[in-house]
Image 1 (tube, rainbow, N blue to C red):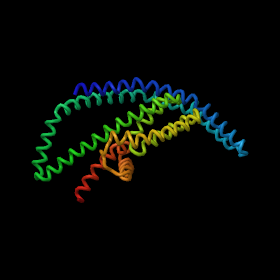
Image 2 (cartoon, one colour; image 1 turned 45 degrees about the vertical axis):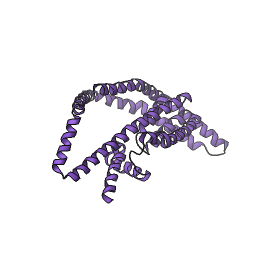
Image 3 (cartoon, rainbow, N blue to C red; image 1 turned 135 degrees about the vertical axis):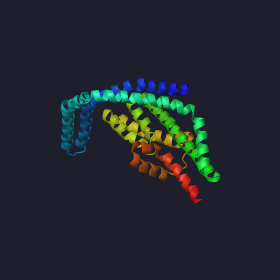
Image 4 (cartoon, rainbow, N blue to C red; image 1 turned 60 degrees about the horizontal axis):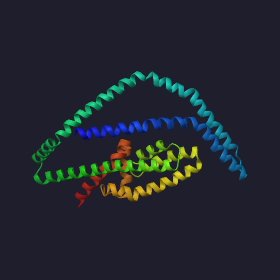
Length: 287
């Protein structure tokens, strides 16, 4: 138990040290370079429209408005938001210590729960057999075991799958010398945890960022993401997840939309394994 907790704390610490400084650098450089990127993209579009004999005044007008909005935000609202942020600094510090305290309590409770898991399992089984007939008690225990396998297999597999996708994305983007390599890799890896919609949620904002910096590399990135998602969906994902859910594509989409609507991001993450368990229970009852 101690080694398991130490391992996960070390993983989180290493990821934080590696990723957070790079994210800060990428986001800062992105904000600084955004006006120039907008001007460059606008100039390219206007030049193309002039060559084709189209009216380019509307593009120039939209560019001027976008730059004026950005400069106004930086000069007024940005500093105003920073003042509000510093005004809430005391509340944030209190919240930080409160969260830290809860994390420490959570780790202590986790140690006790993990240490007594066999006792808790035995006591739960005794209560189930005491409350139900032997037949129904066995059905309930089998269902709980299967639910544990579905949830454990799906969540652990999806985390490993997303980590692999994030690392592959980083390696390829680094070789291709893409802008915002770390930022885009983190976005693609994290959003990949959400089934079905996740790859698109991560690819769209990432593609826009790279397109603004370099349109040619943006198109290459879009092509690479399409290939990467095909590899993940047909090779990596099935190898890691296997048949952990047993749901068709329709029910996967249904589970994400339904539980996402009820519980937000958490619902989108746990919706598929939860619905897989419900689906199997209903199937057995019907059979």
